[in-house]
Image (cartoon, rainbow, N blue to C red):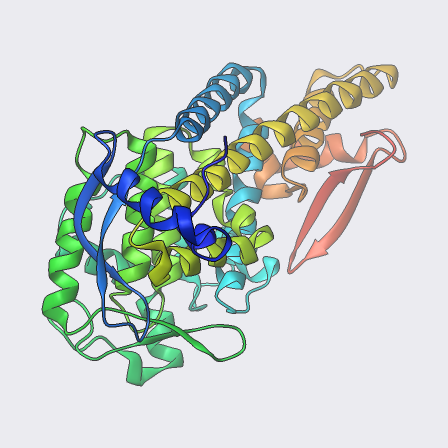
Length: 398
């Protein structure tokens, strides 16, 4: 039987509402947290709690199964193709996490930062953190000071440049209150304040995050909610929160689905914000179960989409290689370059520059250019990107 939210019961079945709340709150299978949730402009706060319904177990099992399938698939994907796919994931992920917050960025801008062509964009810090995530760079996430340091590396430069009055004015976080508004300008939530309350709540959230008695996926979902509820910064909370979640997923599981979380959330933006709104409602009485269930579904979708995309591209790669073989390219270097371009075109969508071709093939520029010139007619396409030519395999071959 699906887990019915207290919020829905309050309106649909008032007679069952109070009884159900008491049963869930006092159940021996319910975990309580020293964290209070209060709806905007409501006097009463409720202690946060999490139930363990069957749906929760099914979801964690599904994510584990998808993760196992992904690990089984990855060795069959050539390393250059995997790198190209990872590159395209970073571009789409950064653009998506910005778009969720109404921050404008283009794929070209992000690509130029990744390639080193753009060293002045305010997006540079955010992009670099996702590059570090993809490279499995580690950092500490144990204290409030760690959270502030991450914020400074991630989005502070961009936030301060666009809104100098939103510069943080507390020891680590903000001193004053901040409102969370909907797309129509309606205030839907108010972050905790003053800073002493922010610090106290974040310390509680960090303890939950590092409590190994709680399954890791539940900890990740719980921290995502707690961080958004606390809203420790004047701006940049959403991007920071989603990055932390992606980093945690990449550290415990695999970086590729972690780099597609914001892509999934952007597609499910309305549902994402509904999860927060209903969890914050007074009628919900602090029940975090619906949020955790909904957020784990988004994580499962990120794993599922990553797996499906890789499977599709791998199938196309086999078709493309078969078509290349029919061209009967005799020279092994030329054949190798054609396969590199096929992988880059399919898994990254961007193709490769001369510099990238030389680096990945470990051949000189003269050798690569000579082989490109000798490719069968119609096999390659190219277009100018700044000063560099980008080479791709023609659509007919893929």
